[in-house]
Length: 149
Image 1 (tube, rainbow, N blue to C red):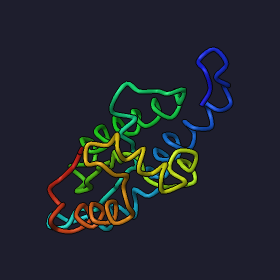
Image 2 (spheres, rainbow, N blue to C red; image 1 turned 120 degrees about the horizontal axis):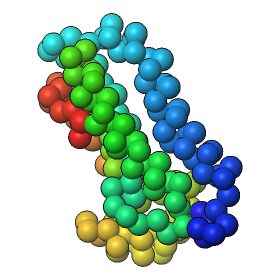
Image 3 (tube, rainbow, N blue to C red; image 1 turned 135 degrees about the vertical axis):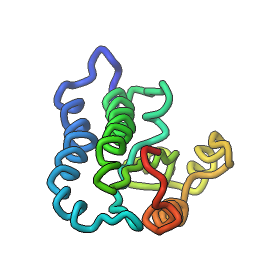
Image 4 (cartoon, one colour; image 1 turned 45 degrees about the vertical axis):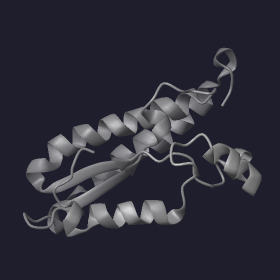
């Protein structure tokens, strides 16, 4: 992140490269395997990692991050529509804050994690089990009819 007036182009390009361009190209390259794995009863799955920051206009000097995650969500909906006939579902998570290297500056200590979590409607930051459970749902038969979400 950096103030708008000094936000470096290389940082913008790097974040879009990782968060959007890589998602697009990886999905495209994996299409033969996805097509081979897909069936009417059990479609193949693509799950993208968006962010809650890509669903609301909140930058906090993270312009490329928020815009790239919004692009991930839009790409997810676009690919879901395009791949439906191929029996491939495409969904994206929009997680709020989790402890990670990227968020260590804000969630690195228990006190910081509690503070950040206090701004989340459920009152805490996410845990690995939160993402794991949602992933299992989307990848199981229970989630086989969900696409574009």
